[in-house]
Amino acid sequence: MNGSNTHEEWCDFLNLSALTFGVTTRALDRGKIYFSEYMDKSTPTEHNQTHIAIRKHGDSRMYIYAKWPSLQLPDLMSSNGVVEKALGRQWVVNVFSFWEDVYRPKFASESGLSVKEVINPIMGDLRLIRNDIVHHSSISSKPNSGRCTVLKEWVQVGEEIEINEFKILDFMMHWGLVQIGPESVEQAGLFKGDGSSATDSDS
Image (cartoon, rainbow, N blue to C red; front, side, top):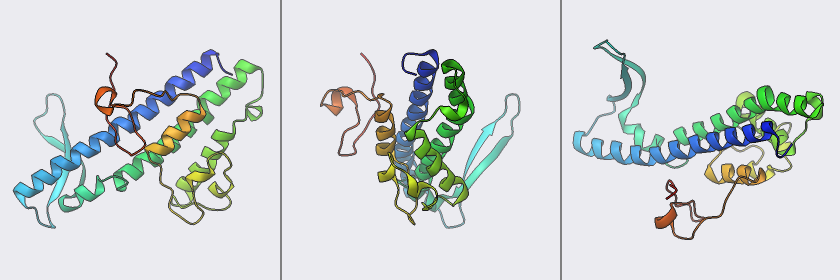
């Protein structure tokens, strides 16, 4: 499959999916600081709600499509908080769905195989993790993610499934899509093993 048009498309898709997770989780860090500062100034009560709203073009009204108790926002947006957990689980579901419905059939057609003959152990494990996320309230179970082989370190049976940036890094490494950059985070903004991170830009 390497070197094919479908393989290039698949790698581009994985890159975009990882980028979306990385950029969004970094935005959470900034958002947490913003809301913490906001609450220090406004001292909201347990009854205050923070709204996510948008104004349609040509319409002066604001449309609120999401809300949450203001006091809970910093914890929700914290590292490994509710929002980051949701993003990680959405990443699993999204990546596997595109594999199963788009890229696996393309690989099959390109290789002259049936879809069932296109087998990848990493994606097989992601399917099992996805099944527990969707059908088992994100709790690892023996019939599903408990049978993982390549990604077995990602889960522990009976425990909540959490998908963080290190696991996405691990996934991208399996596909050969990780580069090792300079040591200096200040220079390159690359992910480091101590968990510090920032966005990177080419000069």
